[in-house]
Length: 382
Ligand code: MG
Image (cartoon, rainbow, N blue to C red; front, side, top):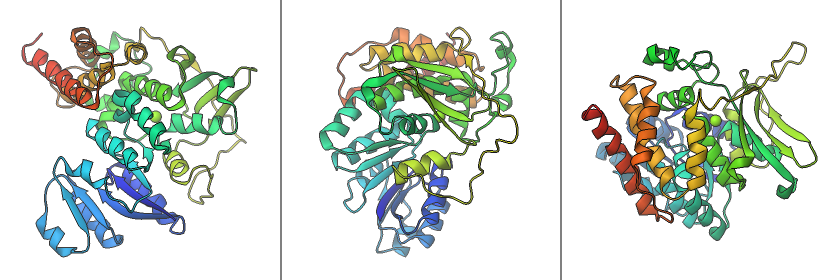
């Protein structure tokens, strides 16, 4: 029985994780959970699972009194504290945003395995986090369709024989638009993703393909492959979730109908592929679109930028993340236009001071600096 602490329980990954836990009561047990603001969701969870500890951003003493046998953690620091609990085996980190970084690191230092959906952890802190993973001898398993695909493709293979990683991309909501046409798109258009239904922030990051850039960075840290051997291709049907090419010319691809429950399940029950009667199986009696197109870096400059940022390393991942967080927030609040997101991100990186060997507090400081830089440039109408 694997005991799980799930943070970000009320989000899209969180709710699908709970669904999987309910399907496998003989293998998985939820012992702790955290939400950000959705107290109603937490109340529901407490009534369904005998949780030992829970987290919410805002204190709710009434709820805490109702469950005297559950330890409650509240406030900004509560998220970093709840992971210090002893009784769980694996942290499922489905928190959205850079606040998910410290809890990952603290859990690793408590020798806990990690199922990671929080991209920010690796994009900003990849070097520090992977060093901690090695030092503490824990497993870090990705909850992302692309990285789960790569992990499945390299099972029982010698990592030295990997020639390149090929990460597939749907191309996002605006894949058929030219850069010129992007100038007139609206927030509503941007939120219509062609294949995946996800939160607002990641749907925008898919449209700019910043998300794909982040995934290249994550792949670099997870699989220790240099950036010049990680490629991205547009694959519209989202059937092939990513590929690995080996030195002998073999290409391994992982395919399925798009369904986030597959990568979640693979991370939670690794390395088993467990039977699930609720999934849709592929139908090979009809034609399947397995076409791939080159990603044009001049159309999607943020993919190239992420590779450059990753190659620099240091504090630049944190700067990239902070700048993008704030620029997307401005767009979601209708303060800037879609095509301006990348302008703000690029401008912020150009202005940032580079630190080669930052510690974890430097990363938090530079993420904050980048957010403020974007906010100030917008306020000053630059
Ligand atoms: Mg993905």
